[in-house]
Length: 330
Image (cartoon, rainbow, N blue to C red; front, side, top):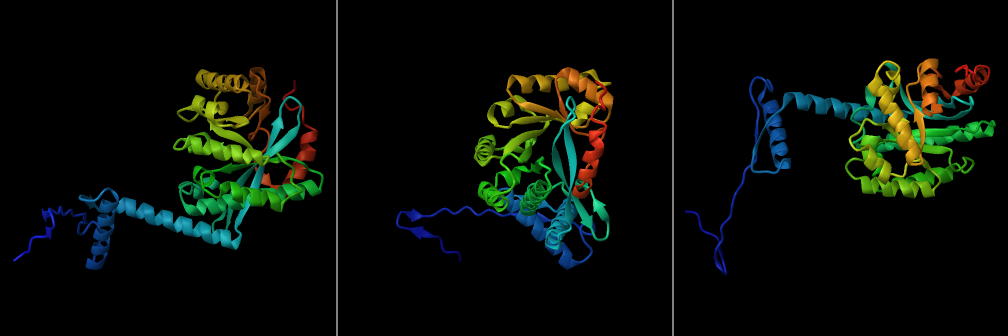
């Protein structure tokens, strides 16, 4: 017979809860061991969701999780094998023709699949620890390239994209300080970090603090894809970014879509009101450039100016650009 628990104050009442994982045959597996593993996974998901509940095993989610894990493992191995490279897209002053900087864009030189664009492997990496490692590699590679270009008399600001998880990592500022110290010939201000507007949604106070600490090191910030998030005015007020980047989706259609044109004009006006510089992405033609200039946006990047290119091709492109700096025909 069960013996009731006793305490100095009398009987104790214990409440027992249960978490249950449910899987189905034959949809979720073809043998008993696999069914047990699936039920076990579902049970732990029930526990993580707050306990005292049941959870059905989700085949599609399990497959997605497995695919994500394999991708992250592949990226980690690619880092060890040095399979990543940076391409650089020039940024120009359309009014003067000056090339004042480049944006560093990562590519994966996959040994079997060839050169992979970031859209193939970057989605989902921002919240994974391997994303921090890859982000640190990008900053280091960009600084190394800036140092090499400086040695050849080419001084450009290099912009690097940083994710929310990376930016909010507790060691981000100290790691950045160490990277900058490793390349003392790279001048203060030659590194710019681009932050997605939506990446700071969860902890804007922490992001702002990190940005200010980086600015004390001489690193400047740009808000990337500006206008695509939910609280652009809040970001303008609270995040100490020096530059706003107008999202390319608005710029590309601004010649045909009055709403996109109004958004572009609005961002230019906001930048001016808040004392920020502004640069347009997605400039694909001279017509885009002319319209942006009439709106007061002088800085731009896009396929109409140059596609992203390997570092070795940039000096040759610069020589060619000098002969077509009047491409807007002002």
